[in-house]
Amino acid sequence: ANDLTRRWQYCMGVALITVIGSCSLPLHAMPLTINTEEYPPFNYSDDQGQIIGSATRLLRDALRQADIEANFRLLPWARAYTEARLRDHHCVYSTTRTPEREALFHWVGPLVVNEWAAFSLAERELTIASLSGLHAWRVGSFREDAVGDYVAALGISVLLAPSERDNILRLEAGLLDVIVTGKATGEFMAQEQNIALAHLFTFHRAPLYLACHPSVSEALLARLQTQLDALHSDMQKDMQ
Image 1 (cartoon, rainbow, N blue to C red):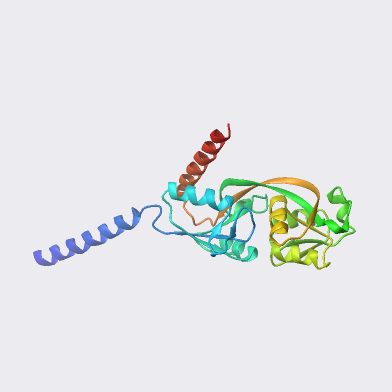
Image 2: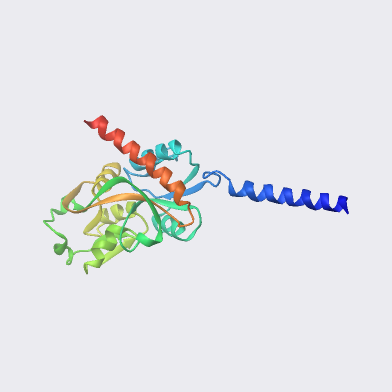
């Protein structure tokens, strides 16, 4: 009987240690999967396939300082966004924080600020000064993009492409009259592809965030937010 009791006590002890150990795993035990897209200059791939950009650099620095392990992936935006919305431990950036998206994610940021603008080919010499002037034109954006959604919500017909780079090419090919996108992104891609764009007008400023599936620990993200805030504070001091 004593031998049976000792065996039972041993097994219970092992089980208790296992439970305690699993509950005390560090916050960074499960790496985050962080999705992004080609959206320069904030996030994009270089010639070696490395994910770079101003938002990427800031996010990587904050993750490192917060001691959080993460795997970055470059995907088409609609897939990057959908996976972060539906899959545990997935995040996506650079994401516009809208009322429709607010409850779907846990948010960290802002990372950078994006100016929304309308462009046309310079050779077209279009004179459009506001969003209300777009109704008569073929306007391009891409799937799940907050800029295009914003414009479409105003009753403007928006043609959706798979990616931002496709829109630049469609504009050059004469399939679109105007594209709506981030001002810095439009200028970057136009220069990259040697296409002369005309900036028609800017219509909104939107901070961009890291958006994470609700399964991601809020304590972990609070730690990341603290480091991100510190980096922003250091950047502001350097500018003074």
